[in-house]
Image 1 (cartoon, rainbow, N blue to C red):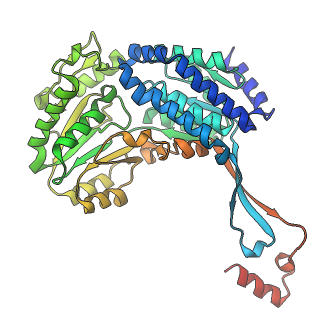
Image 2 (image 1 turned 60 degrees about the vertical axis):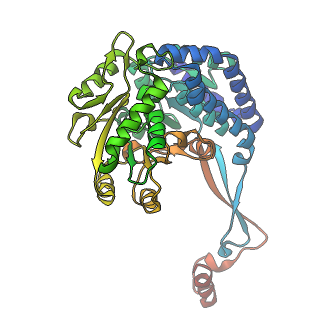
Image 3 (image 1 turned 135 degrees about the vertical axis):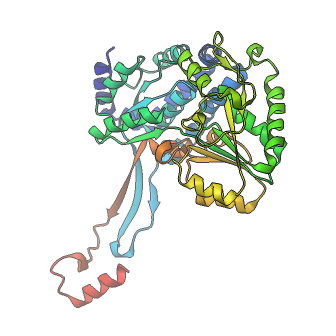
Length: 457
């Protein structure tokens, strides 16, 4: 079926109001959950072929998170969809006030290749829970995962409700030429700008989940062994192709040498001394990104790793020391298994510097200093992050996940996800048994004027 035909069918189907029914939404979510369990092995195989992900990593960072999101929505969607009563000003007596969440309507979800299953299906879960129809447009750079996702979607959903569109730029442009009611995009900053421009033509609301250079600060009080362990996990997960991976480390000068040794030890513990023969270590998505990363590595500053295997599209977990802000690797988001180390002497000075930089999607601080922790919490603007850990904040249905400024706008997961795919109406239900005259013209009565001032203080 063509994109034009699917778009028209979804417009027509939404007007039938079937998706407004909560039991309909829950039934769709249950179908999706059951299909994921049925095809789990095939999903794992697709992720391995596309990104070299192991079964354990695939479940931990993609499949398990999606199942958790579905379970959360099944448990809470009725509550989220109910009227939410709020207080009413006395001047509006007698009346009740409430908000009511309703679906936007016809939704477009555009997803990237680095976590192809998670970043396609997780937004779909939120869209279904909120009562929308949905068109999914994944990246063409994850063809094997796309194949199994398409099988799942076409097997359990009619295209008038949820559709899966494959293809590249031509298909993406055609979709963006349509007037959707809501667009959810995950991907690069450059493409995000283009998506936002296209949505602006239709005054279409959207959420942008982008990226950027997410800092990781290690101060003098940090537990270096534990810090290294958790940073290695966050940095080299999915071969560094994670939007919230620690992009670079800022470490106090006095701790740098010890920290680097701890990081080396952790890489050996977690990945072994020959990652090219480690079946649990992933790969770069394609040759283009492989070449880009290899050109970012300055071999003169490599203190660990640095080698690549183009045949396997793999790059060793790499550490670069002596890096400065002007180095090439600091001019763009790395999105690969290369960790630059920068030093600082004054924590306050580094905070001031970070304030002037684009707002990152994530920020991480390893510290036992409560003053430093408060500064990170209150003075810097970033999407989200962790204290004394990395990555894990995105795997919670209790926390919204999203960026700010250059790293995106809007957030999702759990209640935030339901809200992102819903329009929340504000309603006052005014009673008819009493009609106070003070608000009506001609405003000549002094008592009424006094009452207005009194009630609207």
